[in-house]
Image (cartoon, rainbow, N blue to C red; front, side):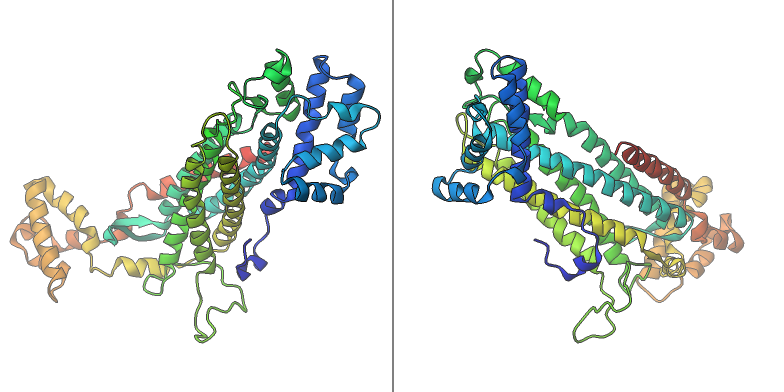
Length: 453
């Protein structure tokens, strides 16, 4: 459970509430109801019995104390629920509850119903994040700042360009989330060992009927050891978490006093330290990074949980369920914080511009080299600019003055041309256009998600 006090200010997306015992029990009952109806359609159980089972597959009708007592006595996760459902069914309907199914058929399918609800919440959260990114991309489209590679100034970019990169990556995650839906949300109904023997030759038809009623697909091979689809979902959440963490780390860095280019929301009254009153800590960024680390750490667990021997092994079911539930809980927290952080992000274009001048024009070395290269060749121009840049970096000499004093440069460029080329705001390429294009894309993806609610 998230115990970070900043969660008091972050909207609870409701993911953890989905993974409670009661929520899972109701999902399992939903599967039992769909099973009874599918079997009734095929003449395997009486229609009246199926109708009664469906009528009683509501958790509030069951005696919770009976179920808990049964769990304590049997140490079995489903049998006491089946017993209680059978008990409250009128007539002989209880005799047809759970007909031909095995525990994992019900629990895995039900757990995926729960996960599907979480999946819908994640998509809506991402739509909110993308909308916030679109606003940021447009606001920062023309805000020039140092582009950095290997932690050092490279060439000028804009803040909007940074956000455009985030949008591009997040939009692909939405594509992945939609693509995996038919693979992830699938019914497992193969019986005890996945052989369909208990369904008297009608196993695939039963599974198809259950899938149709639950709005899911049906597994081609309903084997209890098939878990790649569940592992895929954990890995997908790990990918999304990694993107969110990368963004949070960027903001964390840019918020440092040495950079001062952005600041995440710091509401009045927020305390950063018990002993340092001046602290304005990047709490949201840190929470995102920490939670994302935990999601990524669950991906290996999910992959290990695919290593199920023979036709079933409860060990790997336990670990897979844990990985899915934990990864989902953290993902909801991450996306809530992402939305809050991006919606309230403060941009400081003056500091961005000031940071561009930290190297006294050396960030424009590429532009100078290319212009000079038009007359003396690219490689020779590289050497000339390189010598001036290295001399400025290792001494107290001024880069601009070194260029103006260089015979090769003087021969082909005037001081006015040099100083014009040293303007970093004139060398941001297509950054602004990319920022605005991705802002449009973000809004389109968000609109598609919201329209599908």
